[in-house]
Amino acid sequence: MSGHSHWATIKRKKASNDAKKGQTLSKLMGAVYVALRFGTNPANNLSLKSAIEKAKTGGVTQDTIDRALSRAAEEKALEEVVYEVYGPSGIAILIRAYTDNNNRTFNEIKHMVSNYGKMAEPGTAKWLFEEKGVIAIAKTDFQESFGDELIGVGLEDYREDDSMKDGGPAEGGGEEVILITDPKSFFEVKTVLEKKGVKATFDELQFLPKNAVEISENDKEQLQKQIDKFLDNPDVSQVFSNIA
Image (cartoon, rainbow, N blue to C red):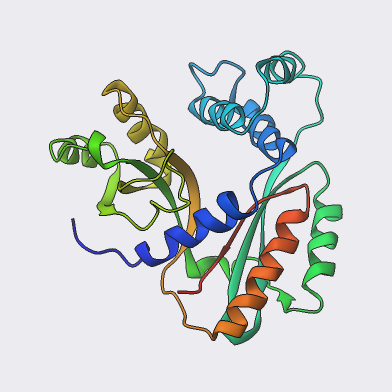
C-alpha cells in the first residue's frame, strides 16, 4: 500500500520502549489491571487478553496473573494517563502511564522535566500525534489476500519492513510486514490474524506523530537520555516523541 508518514518513527518506538529499556513486570501488570476494568474474562475482553499475552511474553508467571484476576474487584483501580511535554528544538513528547495516584506521578514527571523542557497544557502536544495500532507479523505469514479482509475491519496501511531484523521484535530477526490500524479496530485486526493462524511478533497501541521533526544528533542523544529517565519511573509504560 502507499507510503505512510508514520513509517519512519515506528522502529524508534520499538527500540525505545522494548528492546533498549524493556518493560518491568510491574509495568506489564499495570496494563493488566487497567484492562480488568472492562471485565475479568479474557474471552470477552480483548484488551485484557492482549495485556495477559504481553505479560506472559515479558516473564510474568501464570500464578501472578491468576492472583490478579481473582482479586481484581479488591484492588485499587489504576488509571491510564498521558502526560504531555515540550522539549528543546520543537520536540513534543507523550508519556503513557498507569497509576493509582495521578498527582504523585504527575509531580514526578514534572520534576524530571524541569531541567529539560516543560509540561504542556493538556491537548497542546497531543494533537501533534495520532494514536494507531501497530502490528508486526513475519513476512512469511503475510498474504496479499489478507489485505481486503483486514481493511474491512480497520486496517489502514501496511508495508514490508526489514529494518527490524537486527535486534527487532521478531524472534531471531527477519523481514516483517508492519500493519497500522485504527486504534478502535486494533483487536479486531488481531483477531482476524489469529483466526488465520498468524501470530504477531509485536503489537501495541502507539502515538505516532502526524509530522516528524528533524533535530541534531546532540538533541537526539539528550532526548534518549530523557526518555530513559521517564521509563525508569515504575508507573511509565511508553514514551513517544515527534522526531524523525
